Amino acid sequence: MSDAPLAADAGLGAPAGAGKGRGLRPAFQLVPFLEVRQSVSEGYRIAVYAASLTVAALASVALLAFSGVAPADLAREIATVGFGSPRALGSVLAQTAPLAIGGLATAIAFRAGFWNIGLEGQMILGAIFAAFVAIHDVGPESLRIVLMALAACAGGMLWIAGPGFLKQRLGVNEVISTLLLNYVAFNLLLHLLYGPWKDPVSAFPHTQQFETFERLAPLGWQNLTLALPLAIAAVLVAWWALSFSRFGYLVDLMRANREMARAVGVPVVALSTVAILASGAVGGLAGFAIAAGIEFRTTQNFFVGYLFSGVLIAFIARNHPLGVLFVSFAMAVLLLLGQSLQVFFGIPAALVQLVQAIFILCVAASEFFLTYRMHWRSAS
Image 1: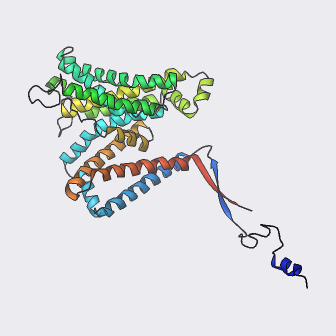
Image 2: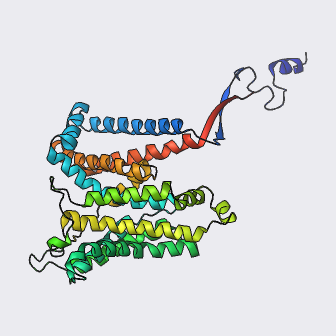
Image 3: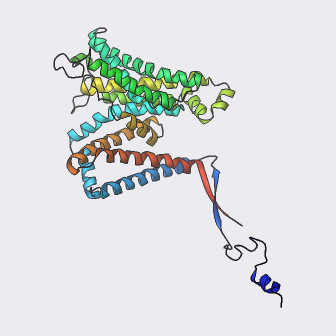
């Protein structure tokens, strides 16, 4: 008897792959499909934003709990550090001022599509220019503090002008140029503080203390100075410029579609230049706020951590000036909370930075849900 029928019945003579998977594929299978959203309602945007912050907060609480800080202890520390006493609240508000100015500088650049990662360098140049006015007694005493602020803005603008030119004319990535200039500014600061500007009284690497008329005046409550009103004024001016003026409308149009903006006659290069220089000026003002409003001198470490904080504030606030102010307050609480956790719970500083990174990642990930809509379709 021939074996061919048996082989055919057993499927041995069938072509390779024939009948493969038959009877195994489910009758109904769903696969995801992404569609770009044409518009997003404000309610949905707020909901996604709130959800991203909630996820970040829960992940941070879980991480700290795993590290030995119970949620109840964490809540008690937040209440104590932020609102436990007038002195605690004053410390938070004092820290809020430079954070708000630095976050605003970053947000202005981001809003114009310029990734300014050189906030620390602009702060350093702002403090150096302000200190130069104070050390060399430039101008009358009655105008000294105003001249210091203007000089700080000029220093920040000078330090961002180079990366702005390289970006506009040569297409050099501004992330690289602004970041590398931070190190140049830091070494310039070290040269001055260990050299001609070293304090002649203490011989420590910082400038001599500014005179009373070279400091931002105290507000008369706790340790607050005019740095806080200065930050609020800068935020309000930026809010008006970006939300209600023609400049802000054109900046948003340029950010949405640069080529279309150029095609309809928007002066893209000039508009970008103004936004970039404004970002640098505000960054220099942040250095001035610390030097003249908090430390009353220029030190070698006053800027540390502000780059990361500025990016975080701008991201969470979605580059909105008013959002920057409120997020800066929360960031000030977080920074002082981190110091408290390090002292009383032995939490390393790197863990506090990890918590900040979690918030950045969650807020950045929320852009996916604002940009795309997910559908489920049948695979058949």
